[in-house]
Length: 532
Image 1 (tube, rainbow, N blue to C red):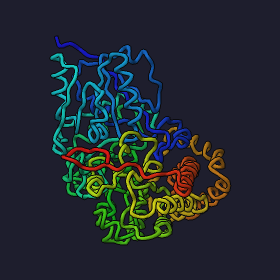
Image 2 (image 1 turned 90 degrees about the vertical axis):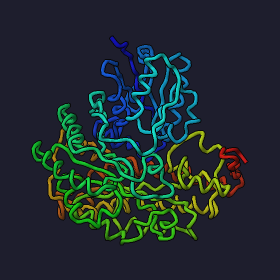
Image 3 (image 1 turned 180 degrees about the horizontal axis):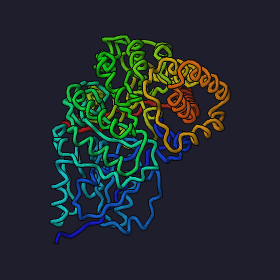
Image 4 (image 1 turned 30 degrees about the vertical axis):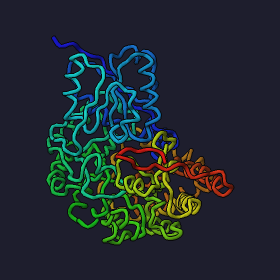
């Protein structure tokens, strides 16, 4: 009989200063964190069936000594904003004599930072977990297991262990249809980690994942975590009819969100199919309204169309857009603040992730900055926030003070309550929802809580909220659940934007008063990174 193993999976804390934690919105819904850790429950499904697995998400529950005592092995890892806590977990495991295995995108991008771990699993886990398990069973207690980038056959990816999740702790649960993206944006690490040829699961695989969630009693928001759901349009168009049939048979228990490129607006049939299947939100990386910047960052797909018209088309199809914008590109010739503000207002996108450009490990941007001698040394060691507060880890072409001032100007303008709820109101009028929102347990309670808490988001917020709600009720009542969602996010976004602005103001003051000095840069010598 094969010896069993007790595996403690620990999902590290995300840094507190993050755009994405939506703490107040979670509290409204009785959840503890927005998204469940899909990567770890997928890895759990790759382990031998006779191994015991426990999952502790540090963002939603306490990790106690008894958890470590129980385990034969600890598995952890994750993304860049989880780095600090992942390193802390590794340190704790080593102090306790517990073998620790690390994996995930940040470990894959910066393996040297995680050298204290016993094992590293680099790249996609499906192809190499068998090798790891075999090594462990043979007595190995250290090693590195590396998968070739972007080559994994995702049709062999297992059904994730959704049973390990405490589903009521999350605003939404994730599933994955495809990996990879056909575009080559300079600042993005997706193509470096997962390749430029999107690989898709079979329809039957995804249906089995939805069946598993449904059988566990889950209802509501399911997020397709694909980096670009429409990266392989041909496969997606074959998948959506099966997904719609499944939704019909189950009386539409799920509403879907995802991430996609702006060219979705060019395909009316695909957009209609997504709406008919009950997709209600997508995240789109707009990055900049400036054509020169888009060309330099190799995001040319955003230059071939009217952004305003494209977003309006998506909204009218019944799907609302959240968007990403970035300040700090080399191509910025002067102030970009007003152009970005105008773009956000013209497109009526309420929720905009505006960040400072950050050179991620392994990207084309990092390689270029390294070659130009502009990448700061030591910036890869720690992460105190996300790209809202930890960006610009390089020497900017424009004066750093001007870049920071543009950034704080954009945030102050778009998250002013008058501007924010003005965009929500316009979205509410445009949103062409054909299917009514399915009320699930807690929706009414969440709305009542929102009514009593909306004033906490800042002076003038409550009045703007109620004016917007009345307008939506009069002109497009089917959009009400979705404008309520975006209003709930303002409980986080309003105060968070003011917190970021205060931090940026301190940075600007440091620059102006000579307290900020250009850090040492990294130079390239014989394929090694060394401080200059």
